Amino acid sequence: MEMKKLLTVLISVSSLFIFFAVPLVSECVGQSQKQVVLSHATFLPESGVHHVALKEFFKGLEDVTGGAFKTQFFWSGSLAKGADAYQRTVKRVADTSTVNTQYTPGVFPMFSIFELPIQFPSGEVLTKAALNMYKKGYFDQEFANVKVIGVYTLSPYILQCRDRKLTTVEDFKGLKVRAGSSITTQMFKLFGAAPVQTTTAEMYSNLQKGVTDVDFSPFEAVIIFKTYEVIKYVNEWRTITSGFIVAMNKEVWNALPKEGQEYIEKNWQNYSIKYAAAYDAAHVRAKELLLKNGREIINFAPGEKEKMDKILASIWENWIADMEAKKLPGKKAVYDLYKSLTELGVEKPFVGYTPR
Image 1 (cartoon, one colour):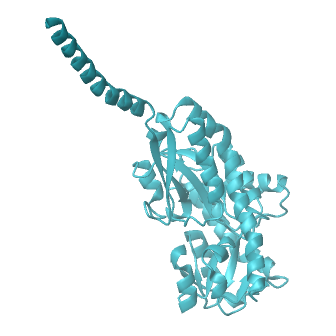
Image 2 (image 1 turned 30 degrees about the vertical axis):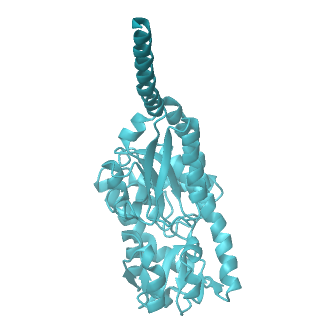
Image 3 (image 1 turned 45 degrees about the horizontal axis):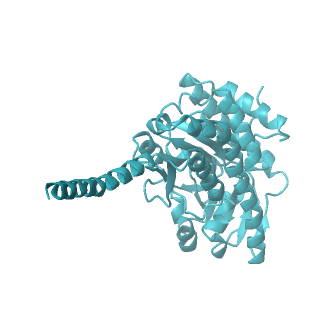
């Protein structure tokens, strides 16, 4: 009888052990497979043309870490507006972000070189030049607060005209033109236009209502913001653009396993070129969309670009002087960018300046 009681007690204790041990084992397994979800902030909508490549890049990080680091995207400024993305990444409100550097004036002085009047055939070509400049260390100081995991430029900018053709410099006089940076603001003032500072999100409504007569942006805008509905003409000037970086918080970078860091270091520059190439592909699609909807693609009349050379010379001179005053190598950077672009096959890439 005593033996039966003892056996019953042992069975009960064993059952309790199994009952409590299983959840503990499961919890341990769960902890060993715990996934870190990184946030990526961008002011652009998910339909942005380079986001296929961006998602692919971060999916590669997830795969190489065995699913330990996944990325959640916050589109259209839902985590950080364009002007806030960089600082929110520094402070780790966002783990990573897409940063349009012209939205934070003064923070990236040397990188603003890509906002100067440069004529170039494609975003891919200018991005290759930008990566060359990055490797030379020109941006080390201003990129020091984050880990840069992407450097690229958009395709050349165009002039989306609401209802007036722009074929001469004189045609700018009195027109309200959206200018996204201090450099483009200076340029349009020199042309006699009235620069308007608004966001890309307001592009469609501003053109529709006449708040702006002209929008200065890449061809991608025609697709994303459907501006072909509210414009009649596009001047394919192919001059000036915006520079972008993909930034990662430094603590996040340091927390990545070795294989994650190695993956990023090996691939981020190639993906930078893919982002730019996506904008170039959109350039072609946007032209087709404009023509399909009866819009007219125009350009400046012969002799107008020579006029621009004289008008825009001061922008280069002022930028170089400003950099040199800040003890930054502005003149040397301009020389090296010119050299890099000509080596990439671009003839006379600067409007208004030839380095000596």
